[in-house]
Image (cartoon, rainbow, N blue to C red; front, top):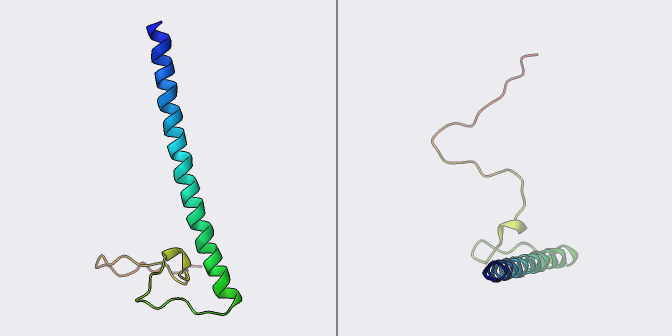
Length: 82
């Protein structure tokens, strides 16, 4: 009987953890949808991106060039040897 209670307890803990994970994923999805809606609104209404002093999420910034690390080394250059 103790083994049955231990199994039920473990299943209850797993159920609780799964529910928390689902809630977190739903929150993340909601945040992504909100950011997408804001970006779509800006595109449709030709609004500029917020200025640097405004709150900007990195997902909304253009990805022209990836940010380079400032580690003191020059960027690697690839040469064509063909």
